Length: 273
Length: 289
Image (cartoon, rainbow over all chains, first blue to last red; front, side, top):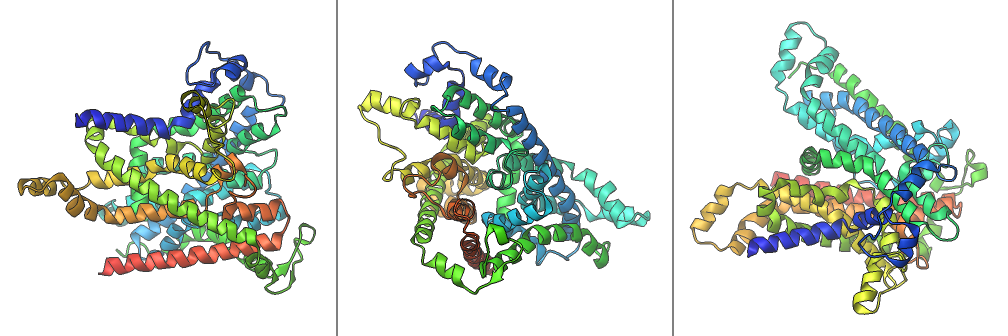
């Protein structure tokens, strides 16, 4: 009895929370003619025409460019965050320096509305020619990713026994060598988690993409919204749905494959942050 | 512990510190200077100091206060609802999820989709001709509300936000709930305590720190909301859905009122700083007690 109730609550919750995704998925398989007569949740004659049109006809709306822009900027943002945060995490975990000021400041950064920094960054980017470039967008995505990456790595390095460092030190290894050749391999799972988490967060970012790019480096989230604004004579819902599904697919797939690691690290990041 | 010399520690911290100073410290400084200057897109590099006029302009702008009120109400309503529903789901579904852990995946999927994308998707869901929700409401009840008009836009956006982010609160609560030792519950059950007493006197007190953190994170994220609101309504329905982030964005990009936008940014920065300081003090006090 109560077991049935649990299943019902689960189904209702899963359906309600995923409703927009489900509707978009269904609509992406409907022809334009079917859509005008059947906005319901079933498909009379499924078609791949919307996907063919999005992937085949790239004159007006080049989805490959948006996917490429997102991938490039997201990779820069995710990898840069790891490269910058790892040595800092090592120093914080292995000495007291940085624990009192830098770590709390970075953790609190996650709670700062980043729109505050967007306007001066826009002006800065204009001076340095970084507007509408992969590098420019990637740099700010790194800022977005750094807080969680730092927390996850500080925690992971804190669990590596210090005896490991000491043994390497006795053998005459320098601090940099110990960090890169002894500690880094041990915390590889945490690095992977940071990468996946950073990739999803950065891919889904919208505000900076909207402000700092205009044509050459527009990411997928912003590109998808162009599609809604640009089409005169009403939105083509079928093709729009296909665009949204394709644009949401990379982080969703990554997330669904790795959801166990993500749930653990999300909790760790929130609790210890 | 003396493996790492202080000089080496500082060296390892340098890239991160430098990066943050360049990309956050410098912009913060620019913000401060520009907020007390007269500046336009033509004179970007030569701001003229003019005093606190920009702040007066912002503080006497009715639109500004309307956006503060929107963000504040939005943050409280969504954070509360997300935590309450999340708490219920975490505890009620715990036995089910323990047996079938794969069921977590659909409950976490909303967290993987960009809020901006979700906003766009709801344009379809709510569309009066193409959207399934109005279609079924008409079919079953003969009527469908105008989801995005002045009266309903706030509620609609709040529901959109709640449905996407309840999974976040749920996830934290489920992890905390699963982490409670079953021995404690069994001991209480042996003493004859009914489930609701176990819940009120054991589970909830043990989960209190997690609940506070989840509420705080969701409140902050609700207050700075931009993506899904912008994608779904713009600032829509006659400015009724202008959040503070959207206000700043529009002042800058649509009205080219740089001084006003920057002054509003500084005010938001100070408010966030005040809230964060308070929270950190409370947390530190709790830890010491």
